[in-house]
Length: 136
Length: 139
Image 1 (tube, rainbow over the protein chains, first blue to last red):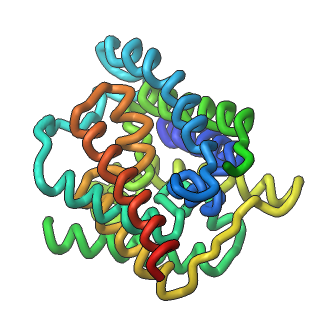
Image 2: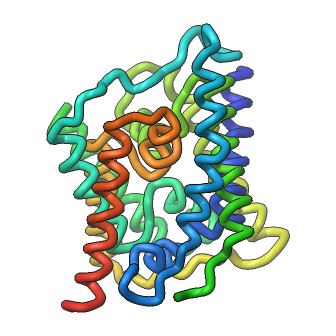
Image 3: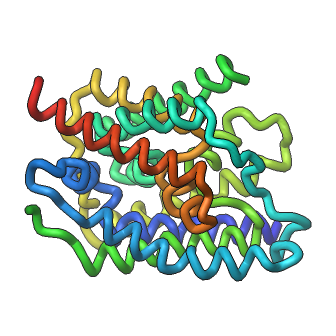
């Protein structure tokens, strides 16, 4: 129960972050990717603000024997750079550039009730499902 | 150059980073949105569902309250329907195959100094930049 509550609170904080930073706005993201046009560096400041917190804190937290509310940390076990990683990231990058949405802002953006966001999220879920079916 | 939202970016980024640190500290989980959502779609373990659902409800609650009490969300979506569908499919498929998105690889993985996440972040940033360039200059 506590784990569900903490997860909810964390989701709210994440959502406030996406809204305050305007990363919920695809035009801001496309502006960042448009380096030869009217470049919008906002996303770089968002990454800098996030990493300023996560770089020291992750290091500190991962020294604990376990998290506060669970028995273990759930971290990615893989360490090798393989083809699925690179091909997947490349496919994601193309989709990201096409609409200016990545999963977090798209999901948070559902709050706008914009039908386009619903379409994108539905297609995104279908894409995840398709990949899970194809690659297990 | 477009006008950057420097203060909002830094504060919002710090909030996103704090959320990621809190989820790791309390739940031991990585706050990668594609992973949180993906586990909800395909995980067979029932115990995996509630915290993921709670996170996503929280994620949508913040902008929903902003819209309710403050003003319309700053959201300009210019892509047409076929582009949105294609983009969504690519983002869903790619983040699943590449095991992460901007939050999982970009914010959390880079904080762990993971070579995999650094490779993924450089790759999706480069392809994103190339896609915007081609979309603007060729079509």
